[in-house]
Image (cartoon, rainbow over all chains, first blue to last red; front, top):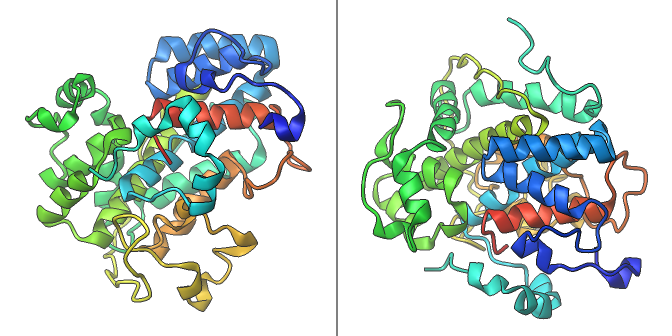
Length: 111
Length: 245
């Protein structure tokens, strides 16, 4: 999703902060709220975001969004429960991005 | 018995529609290290964890490990298993090597640990999808009788995380396709200590996300959201769970 590939400009800080803005991504704000509702098991928030997505993007988009969120309720848990590190290549590629987004604050698994 | 996924939205893709009941049934079957009854009990405990008072208190604390207490639970699992299932469900981003070592010190075997983790994650994932589309989580299946074989994958070696895994160069013929398409990402490797668990996990996750995330665009994948939206949801969900990887 980098601008290098697509030529689009995204505000990636929305990923970490969840501000009420699209961050350059179509319907980014309601997709963010949908992820928050599901991941935090806030059923009212999930329902409101679901309705907004269906209204603006259609039901099939809502289902596909729910599927991705569900899958990413799995991969992070598998990573964090087994303590796997970042691959070397990925670590090298993302140095700047991790600094910009403050991702090192999440790197607590080795404690 | 009525179809537990009868209320899926009409626009649910066929691959997802097929994967959910298979994943649900596999939860109930004996695993490599756990019985069907134990696996279903783990799935039930995942649902209980969301309302656990201790988990809520730990979630609010600067460090979850500074808060002692007992989990609210259904009474079917040993305490050490609760200490896997509850934090994995409600605070997975703050799991540590010290947490893992505490689990092992309490007598949970490495292989057993991996299967408990896999079952709990599959349960969380299915429930998360139901929450997303606005369905009640499906009723849990009846356990299937039978004993696990409890045979260690001898080709597994320590690392790259804190549990042993099977490296791409060590796979045996029955796993030859597992690392196809250069899918050597550590996430793919994370649960390989229990090879029997891999199809149960990935046959659900692949249709929910995609089989080959290296692609830059969706190609011939049929999706109603674009690649940028998919990766945003993936990243946002990972951030909400506090995942560094």
